[in-house]
Image (cartoon, rainbow, N blue to C red; front, side, top):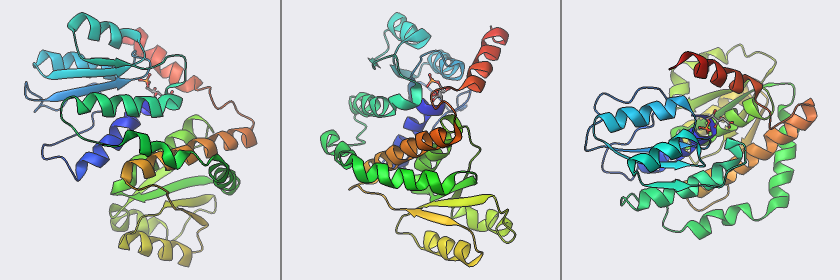
Length: 281
Ligand code: PA5
């Protein structure tokens, strides 16, 4: 879920075009009916106390699936230790979404021990993050552009985890509502809504060399929609998403400053988790 779940989305997106076995992301209390002793469930929860994630682990163990874990502690780590599940412990003490790079690298490494190849060169993966100044400049520009708007982040399916990450960061750090649209599906329904766009809406398009993205930009501009196009640095999908995530994080923190809110605080999520703790035995 949330900042931990986005790691799964990114890995899913990479495996979509390379894995010969079916892969899915579970963000629920339930696991798919087809989960069996031939399945591998990789559970990621930074706190280790997210009930949705804990539940999927218990259910996967019930059907005899192989389970591995990435966490900083909590009940998930206790469970991994008691059941002897392969696990990686990342540094604690951060807010989950800020632990994203750690969680990603830990998961890539853990999955590689099962022969799942997501990234063969982890060192060069972070090269795109080194030049902080232009990243910060781009992020400040985006924060200015998006303030006082309802941002709609649009990407193609390859980059959907990044579009989600952008939305999540705006939600959690900047306390803003935001929406995600994905092409080509966008062109089969949402497109019609843009015939009469609300004036509060601004669009952030994640660029990819994709005919539908080209069409979308031309279409939205033609309707007078204010939009920015984010071009990503990086040699492959994962490094591009990492670069984009950095920009998403910084943009959302600059927006938090502009809006006078505390980026690290997520009172409503705490309220939800407290409710679940009281109600789920
Ligand atoms: O970033 C956040 O704080 C949230 O999105 C959390 O990641 C989410 O609530 C799940 O918690 P955890 O990552 O500890 O499993």
